[in-house]
Length: 141
Image (cartoon, rainbow, N blue to C red; front, side, top):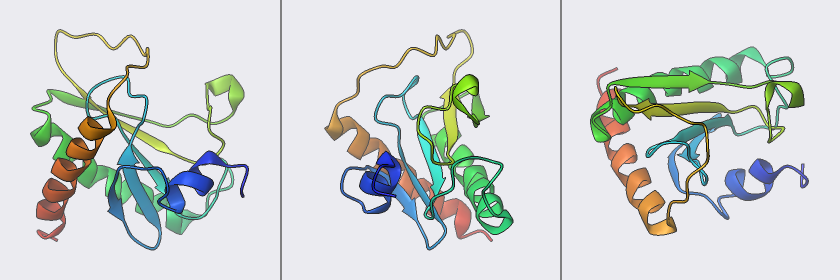
């Protein structure tokens, strides 16, 4: 899937601030977030959307989303979390590789859904903080 930006850059690790990886799932920072700490979780295997992802990958993506959500709440001192997933161009899916958005939210601050610019060094720092915190939740299993 060389035409898929996630397969080409994230799965291969060429251009990503990855905070989690196993044989099924990769978690990384959104390069153009709508909020500080906006993370993405994808299956390591290419699936376009919810209609073609197999159940094992789907469940693993959502299992990791639970740990990521807990980590984001703590790391970014969030009041809540948005977890979202779009399917098809009409539903505003931009990258045609199944992915889940996990976005920290703060009361009193509306998300405009406009993308913000974040430096590579800041994304790297955020990924490191999330990586450390996720492990504490996963160790409790």
